[in-house]
Image 1 (cartoon, one colour):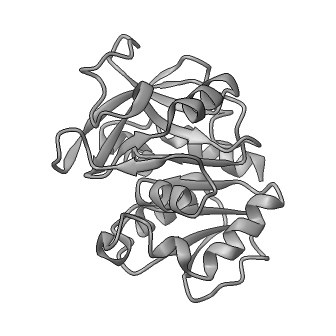
Image 2 (cartoon, one colour):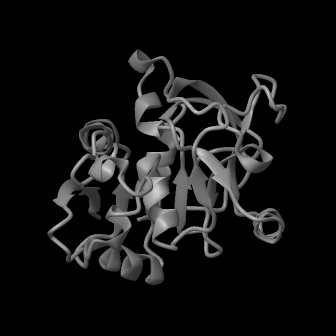
Image 3 (tube, one colour):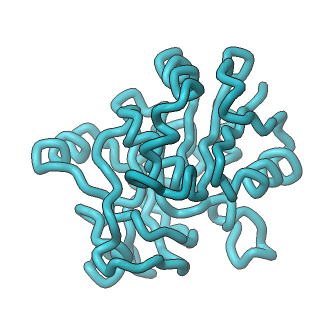
Length: 228
């Protein structure tokens, strides 16, 4: 199996994801520059965090309109697993592969801190290695991570079990204090209706080895590799 890590101008977590997939998990993973628009040889893709094109227009808006996203869209339609992390989540919503949008944090500043997440859905290629309701500790680093969707969309996400992760406190309670950016229903990550496309604002690659302070995010990458 092989996994593409899609790079845009401004990606800055690409090498971290590559390290986790290759050196920690032992997967066949490669960096793919956005101008290399053909991803047909890959069985999965990760769109890493960063600030593609300096977050001009809106975060992820320019990257979502590059030709390589047509290849990502074809992979998604073929049922291949696609993971978007932070800026990658923003790109997936801007490209229409995931519902909703990421707005500026309720407290309109960049936030970089540890968060607790509750695993809400284990029926995706990225969450099958967790237990439902499991509490994990994974950091965030963003200014535009306030997940928004209208009332009907929110109802559909919840009813269709498309909420993958929710911000909670250490005991698993989804309180306002545990919500770092004002996201609706404390949502930290979602999937598409088929479950093969997942986006989240926290950075699992920064919590994939004990030396980093948490290895809770490693299960996400192991789940992806086992699925492929």
